[in-house]
Image 1: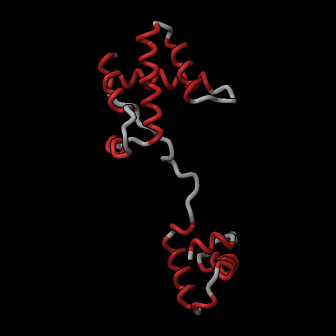
Image 2 (image 1 turned 45 degrees about the horizontal axis):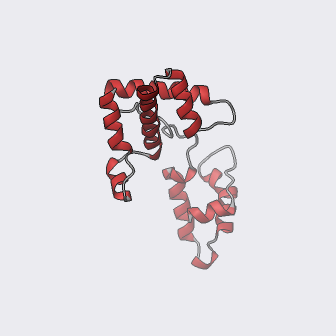
Length: 160
């Protein structure tokens, strides 16, 4: 446990500049998890309080919750600490790994059809309104989709 505390002390040290933080190459989430694990291990070592009390104390001060998720977060903190002591690293975070929806603009066929339409227009007639109208009325026909593709004017402006 002492070795883990020493390693976390180096990782969670707040430097004089952002250069130190960039050298760590930790995401903000992992940096916060490192601080939480460090505080948890220090509490265990110094206070001789139970694991549950220590983890709840750290979670309530660092990650307060209105919906009663502190018990779950405290359990996760204990898991992270156990993993860190055994492996000298935090478990991999899967936060943001699963894309919920895919954007149409990333589809190659959509890009090609939009590019063809944009090239066929005069430069003064291209706007978010005209592109969103074309997408709403023509794109689904060109791509042989059964549902109409509806985008807002602001989205069309970003696509342009």
